[in-house]
Length: 155
Image (cartoon, rainbow, N blue to C red; front, side):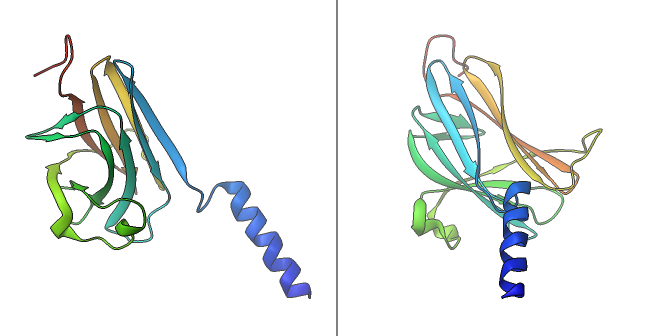
């Protein structure tokens, strides 16, 4: 019984620290929502994120229709890539690269104050532009994107 109580207390402590909990990052582009849900990655060289967008987005060399996708951060080697995958929800439990709609190179940086864990944010430099920022083990990888159409949207 004592081991069970200790186990429950440990799980509650981990939960309170936010470990294993799903988090969300979101941005609004010209009234449209881009939302990303994520948890700490189980793999050392691949992380998966859920993307929901109510607008068509343009990444480097690729236009993404509005909808639900899984994003995979492929972090092997010095140049990380963002795999935009058509699988969503339970279909995305295992990475299937044949379902990749595109693979986008990410901009790699070493932040001044690196984080040791895993975090995802969306910056919003203009009403039509954003960027996915992934901080992971002291490295930041960035994938800029913008609205495909709209007044004042970049082409």
